[in-house]
Every structure is written in structure tokens, then in C-alpha cells.
Amino acid sequence: MATRLVCRECHRVQEAGEEQSCVVCGSTSLTEDWAGYVVIAHPETSEIAREMDVTEPGAYALKVR
Image 1 (cartoon, rainbow, N blue to C red):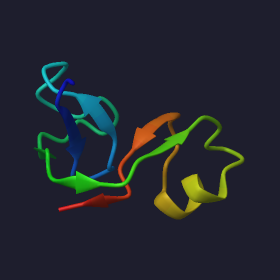
Image 2 (tube, rainbow, N blue to C red; image 1 turned 120 degrees about the horizontal axis):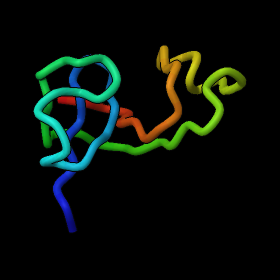
Image 3 (cartoon, helix red, strand yellow; image 1 turned 90 degrees about the vertical axis):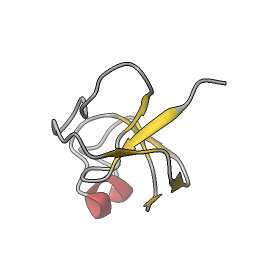
Image 4 (cartoon, helix red, strand yellow; image 1 turned 45 degrees about the vertical axis):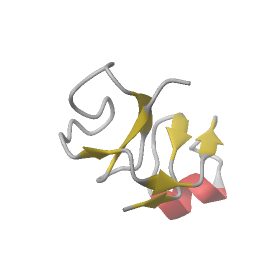
């Protein structure tokens, strides 16, 4: 299984090796230390997306250390 990195700023999950920075916010603070996983397909109508301040569809971690 491929390693997944998570942005400490916006919690976006991405495959390791894709980028050295977050594809959403551009932060270079990525980590492998995270827990929980949510996929947001329609952030404009999602209550979870609103709580997490997510504006782009994609996979996000619930807890980032």
C-alpha cells in the first residue's frame, strides 16, 4: 500500500511522492501521522465540509498530529 501524506494546515490526504507540497493550500508541512478519513464529494452542501472549512472535493484526515 502506498504511503499517504496529510497536510497539517488543511488536512488534505495525498499519495506520497505526488508533490512536496499540498495540492490544495500549497503548504509544505506534510505528515504521515494522522487518523480518520473522510471523502467529501460536494463541499458546498456538506455539513462536515463546513465544520472542517473544506471548499474542494477530495479526501481529508480527521485528526492530524
